[in-house]
Image: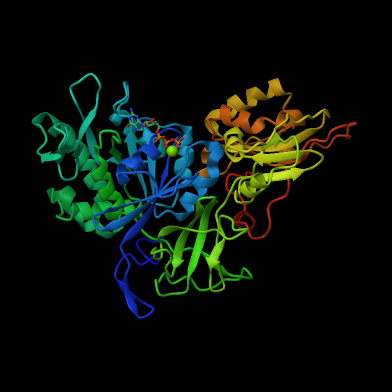
Length: 532
Ligand SMILES: Nc1nc2c(ncn2[C@@H]2O[C@H](COP(=O)(O)OP(=O)(O)OP(=O)(O)O)[C@@H](O)[C@H]2O)c(=O)[nH]1
Ligand SMILES: [Mg+2]
């Protein structure tokens, strides 16, 4: 991705209908992280109130240093990946929220954010046993060398380990909130040796951007520190040379201003990918407030459609900004609004693999919910079935509806071939679990890539396994695999095992085909779907 180019105007007046409209600088930030890591609490602390739109993907705004930040808060539950992927699609920058620690799920989320500037906020530092330095070291090992702490937490002396301030490594100033007021002062002498060594590493990383190599030489040779170090840091974050980690306490309100400073200053805008209505290449969108209205739907709920404006204005939102509009019938996430003949490219979504049997035809409201959820389907193959990413997703779709579910009965002994993607660390667990399910691993010659590492690059830590499972096991395997792999594994059925058919009295429910040509996944399939 290019840096600081194209995309959306960040400021300046522009004529609309004969009057000048000032486009306020703005950024869209997606908050992602494991379930319960503190994203929603942090968004509320940063904005000072509830979201402007609550939903699977919640939207709130805060203005900091003259920049409007649009925060998109997605749930961390791996079965609720739909809103997460919509939020990531719209984001200029990703704020990864971790509750002191990192695991395989963190790595998976991190990789899903690839290509965007990433900032890590560490919450939960007031909990017993939590350790900021250990979390930074773990992140560095799991996520990469670009990880650097930007500030250090200052804990109170009391037994509750409350975070009372942060020490900014670049400015070497301590922001102390222990008195209830945020006071800036010099760090205590005992902090200096630690500050010095961490600061040197950070400064070197900031100056290692290609554009400022001469500054790095001067720093290493003569210890010359450029005046605009903070500005250079923001450039390094935008370009991905530095992925900073900041301690925060949403409850105590500590570390929030430091975090907002980085979010407001260090993002880049990327132009959306567009095609002509027939799929042929076309000119990129010019993100002008006085241009034709073009927007993309991110989420549709009864509270409204959350859209991102790409050209023109809507509800006071200019290009690159988010707003809520009244949805038209049939509108789905990924749809282009307005458009002037262009179609904005959607995002990848995983296929629903978790079936829930329904006692009767789905209620109208359930049909509406499924139609506006790219990661859900309904099928009627002898029995009505709701297909979702997992039980929490099914529960969300059925919430508040008088729908009776019933167990799916599979009485045949047919088997299905599955292709499964599993991070290296979980391969042994997944394979040893197979024997209890009468699963059979297909040797590499059987389906080409069974048991093989996924080549080099991004996939080098992921294995592709191919195995067969009895169909009755398939009904719960989305949940089983998620539990075995902390939500990091995914699978797709390749088809029935080539054996003579049995006298099945009840067929195994089959997932319906992908939705029509207007859905983003129909244009851009894949994502977590290992078939692609
Ligand atoms: N002690 C402590 N609790 C926190 C901190 N940050 C958040 N919490 C609490 O942790 C719980 C989970 O926080 P949420 O903000 O709902 O977590 P989330 O990341 O939005 O969770 P999902 O939406 O389920 O992914 C809430 O009870 C918060 O009040 C923190 O720094 N310290
Ligand atoms: Mg939340």
